[in-house]
Amino acid sequence: MYRCLYGFLLMILMSCGGETLPKPKAYLSLKYAKPNYQRITIERPYSFEVSTVASVKSLPKNWLKIRYPDLKASVDITYRPVNNNLKELLIEAEKLVFEHTVKADNISNTEDYINPEEKVYGKMYFIYGNAASQVQFHVTDSVQHFLKASLFFYSKPNFDSVLPAVDYIKKDMVKMMETLQWKKNLNE
Image 1 (cartoon, rainbow, N blue to C red):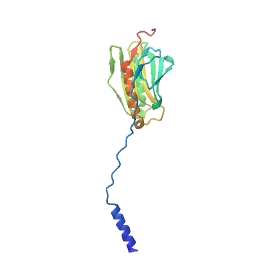
Image 2 (cartoon, one colour):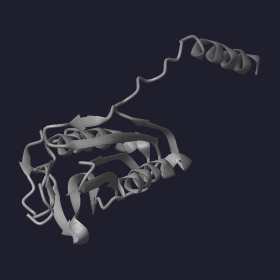
Image 3 (spheres, helix red, strand yellow):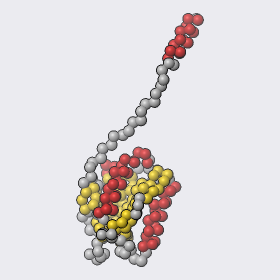
Image 4 (cartoon, rainbow, N blue to C red):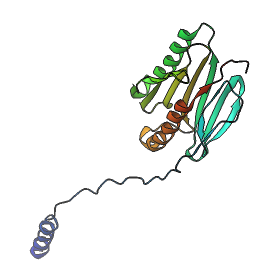
Protein backbone atom coordinates (compact mmCIF):
# COMPACT_ATOMS: atom_id res chain seq x y z
CA MET A 1 0.00 0.00 0.00
CA TYR A 2 2.78 2.40 0.90
CA ARG A 3 4.57 1.48 -2.29
CA CYS A 4 1.53 2.48 -4.39
CA LEU A 5 1.15 5.76 -2.50
CA TYR A 6 4.89 6.46 -2.77
CA GLY A 7 4.88 5.62 -6.51
CA PHE A 8 1.83 7.83 -7.07
CA LEU A 9 3.46 10.81 -5.30
CA LEU A 10 6.70 10.28 -7.22
CA MET A 11 4.79 10.24 -10.51
CA ILE A 12 2.97 13.50 -9.63
CA LEU A 13 6.22 15.26 -8.69
CA MET A 14 7.96 14.16 -11.88
CA SER A 15 5.10 15.22 -14.15
CA CYS A 16 5.07 18.81 -12.84
CA GLY A 17 8.64 19.61 -13.79
CA GLY A 18 8.28 21.23 -17.25
CA GLU A 19 7.15 24.77 -17.89
CA THR A 20 4.00 25.01 -20.02
CA LEU A 21 4.20 27.51 -22.87
CA PRO A 22 1.18 28.85 -24.73
CA LYS A 23 0.84 28.03 -28.39
CA PRO A 24 1.62 30.91 -30.76
CA LYS A 25 -1.34 32.76 -32.27
CA ALA A 26 -2.46 31.51 -35.64
CA TYR A 27 -3.37 33.93 -38.41
CA LEU A 28 -5.48 33.31 -41.44
CA SER A 29 -3.62 33.47 -44.68
CA LEU A 30 -6.21 35.11 -46.90
CA LYS A 31 -5.35 35.74 -50.51
CA TYR A 32 -7.32 38.28 -52.48
CA ALA A 33 -7.10 38.85 -56.21
CA LYS A 34 -4.93 41.78 -57.23
CA PRO A 35 -7.43 44.41 -58.27
CA ASN A 36 -7.85 45.55 -61.84
CA TYR A 37 -10.16 48.47 -62.42
CA GLN A 38 -12.50 49.54 -65.16
CA ARG A 39 -14.86 52.49 -65.50
CA ILE A 40 -18.53 51.69 -64.95
CA THR A 41 -20.51 51.50 -68.17
CA ILE A 42 -23.97 52.07 -66.68
CA GLU A 43 -25.32 55.50 -67.62
CA ARG A 44 -25.29 57.74 -64.54
CA PRO A 45 -24.66 61.45 -63.76
CA TYR A 46 -21.29 60.23 -62.44
CA SER A 47 -18.71 57.59 -63.27
CA PHE A 48 -15.82 55.97 -61.48
CA GLU A 49 -13.65 52.88 -61.67
CA VAL A 50 -14.61 49.60 -59.99
CA SER A 51 -12.71 46.40 -59.42
CA THR A 52 -13.21 43.70 -62.03
CA VAL A 53 -13.90 41.15 -59.26
CA ALA A 54 -17.07 43.10 -58.40
CA SER A 55 -20.33 43.18 -60.33
CA VAL A 56 -22.32 46.38 -60.75
CA LYS A 57 -26.11 46.31 -60.50
CA SER A 58 -28.21 49.23 -61.66
CA LEU A 59 -30.86 50.50 -59.25
CA PRO A 60 -33.53 53.21 -59.63
CA LYS A 61 -32.79 56.89 -58.89
CA ASN A 62 -29.23 56.62 -60.30
CA TRP A 63 -28.22 54.33 -57.45
CA LEU A 64 -25.89 51.33 -57.78
CA LYS A 65 -25.05 48.17 -55.88
CA ILE A 66 -21.47 47.00 -56.33
CA ARG A 67 -21.39 43.35 -55.27
CA TYR A 68 -18.40 41.32 -54.10
CA PRO A 69 -19.89 37.80 -54.26
CA ASP A 70 -16.78 35.97 -53.00
CA LEU A 71 -16.60 38.27 -49.96
CA LYS A 72 -20.38 38.29 -49.41
CA ALA A 73 -20.37 42.09 -49.41
CA SER A 74 -21.62 45.07 -51.36
CA VAL A 75 -20.96 48.77 -51.65
CA ASP A 76 -24.26 50.61 -51.92
CA ILE A 77 -24.08 53.85 -53.91
CA THR A 78 -26.81 56.43 -53.42
CA TYR A 79 -27.00 59.54 -55.56
CA ARG A 80 -29.01 62.70 -55.05
CA PRO A 81 -29.00 65.89 -57.08
CA VAL A 82 -28.21 69.06 -55.16
CA ASN A 83 -31.14 71.50 -55.24
CA ASN A 84 -30.18 74.21 -52.73
CA ASN A 85 -30.11 71.43 -50.11
CA LEU A 86 -26.39 70.66 -49.77
CA LYS A 87 -26.38 71.36 -46.04
CA GLU A 88 -29.25 68.89 -45.46
CA LEU A 89 -27.54 66.23 -47.61
CA LEU A 90 -24.29 66.59 -45.66
CA ILE A 91 -26.10 66.43 -42.30
CA GLU A 92 -28.03 63.33 -43.42
CA ALA A 93 -24.84 61.61 -44.64
CA GLU A 94 -23.03 62.27 -41.36
CA LYS A 95 -26.10 61.21 -39.38
CA LEU A 96 -26.10 57.86 -41.21
CA VAL A 97 -22.45 57.37 -40.25
CA PHE A 98 -22.93 58.22 -36.60
CA GLU A 99 -26.02 56.01 -36.23
CA HIS A 100 -23.44 53.22 -35.92
CA THR A 101 -22.11 54.58 -32.61
CA VAL A 102 -24.41 52.17 -30.78
CA LYS A 103 -22.38 49.17 -32.01
CA ALA A 104 -19.12 50.85 -33.04
CA ASP A 105 -16.03 50.94 -30.85
CA ASN A 106 -14.71 53.97 -32.71
CA ILE A 107 -15.49 56.04 -35.78
CA SER A 108 -12.64 57.80 -37.50
CA ASN A 109 -12.58 59.86 -40.65
CA THR A 110 -9.68 60.22 -42.97
CA GLU A 111 -8.71 63.67 -44.08
CA ASP A 112 -11.16 65.50 -46.28
CA TYR A 113 -10.87 64.41 -49.90
CA ILE A 114 -10.33 67.26 -52.37
CA ASN A 115 -9.91 66.94 -56.13
CA PRO A 116 -10.40 70.46 -57.55
CA GLU A 117 -9.74 69.36 -61.17
CA GLU A 118 -12.80 67.06 -61.15
CA LYS A 119 -14.70 69.12 -58.53
CA VAL A 120 -14.94 66.20 -56.12
CA TYR A 121 -14.98 67.06 -52.41
CA GLY A 122 -15.76 64.59 -49.68
CA LYS A 123 -14.95 62.58 -46.62
CA MET A 124 -14.41 58.88 -45.83
CA TYR A 125 -15.25 57.24 -42.49
CA PHE A 126 -13.90 53.99 -41.05
CA ILE A 127 -16.16 52.41 -38.42
CA TYR A 128 -14.43 50.05 -35.96
CA GLY A 129 -16.46 47.39 -34.17
CA ASN A 130 -19.48 45.23 -34.94
CA ALA A 131 -21.44 47.89 -36.81
CA ALA A 132 -23.56 47.15 -39.86
CA SER A 133 -21.30 49.21 -42.16
CA GLN A 134 -17.53 49.50 -41.69
CA VAL A 135 -16.63 52.04 -44.40
CA GLN A 136 -18.65 54.97 -45.74
CA PHE A 137 -17.90 58.02 -47.80
CA HIS A 138 -19.74 60.93 -49.31
CA VAL A 139 -18.66 63.26 -52.11
CA THR A 140 -20.14 66.27 -53.85
CA ASP A 141 -19.32 68.98 -56.35
CA SER A 142 -21.23 71.40 -54.04
CA VAL A 143 -23.48 72.53 -56.92
CA GLN A 144 -25.30 69.67 -58.69
CA HIS A 145 -24.22 66.25 -57.42
CA PHE A 146 -24.12 64.36 -54.12
CA LEU A 147 -23.04 60.71 -53.82
CA LYS A 148 -22.81 58.43 -50.77
CA ALA A 149 -21.23 54.96 -50.57
CA SER A 150 -21.60 52.40 -47.76
CA LEU A 151 -20.00 48.98 -47.34
CA PHE A 152 -22.22 46.16 -46.08
CA PHE A 153 -21.62 42.43 -45.50
CA TYR A 154 -24.32 39.78 -45.91
CA SER A 155 -23.69 38.35 -42.46
CA LYS A 156 -23.93 39.29 -38.81
CA PRO A 157 -21.19 41.85 -38.14
CA ASN A 158 -18.07 40.42 -36.52
CA PHE A 159 -15.38 43.04 -37.00
CA ASP A 160 -12.39 40.77 -36.33
CA SER A 161 -13.57 38.25 -38.92
CA VAL A 162 -14.37 40.72 -41.69
CA LEU A 163 -11.41 43.07 -41.16
CA PRO A 164 -9.24 41.62 -43.99
CA ALA A 165 -12.17 41.93 -46.42
CA VAL A 166 -12.93 45.44 -45.13
CA ASP A 167 -9.35 46.52 -45.81
CA TYR A 168 -9.51 45.00 -49.31
CA ILE A 169 -12.80 46.69 -50.25
CA LYS A 170 -11.78 49.97 -48.59
CA LYS A 171 -8.97 50.27 -51.16
CA ASP A 172 -11.58 49.86 -53.90
CA MET A 173 -13.72 52.56 -52.29
CA VAL A 174 -10.74 54.92 -52.21
CA LYS A 175 -10.24 54.19 -55.91
CA MET A 176 -13.91 55.06 -56.53
CA MET A 177 -13.40 58.46 -54.88
CA GLU A 178 -10.13 59.12 -56.69
CA THR A 179 -11.55 58.29 -60.13
CA LEU A 180 -14.99 59.88 -59.69
CA GLN A 181 -16.09 62.20 -62.48
CA TRP A 182 -19.34 64.16 -62.66
CA LYS A 183 -21.30 64.84 -65.78
CA LYS A 184 -21.20 68.57 -66.37
CA ASN A 185 -24.96 68.91 -66.69
CA LEU A 186 -27.60 66.53 -65.45
CA ASN A 187 -29.16 66.68 -68.93
CA GLU A 188 -26.08 65.19 -70.64
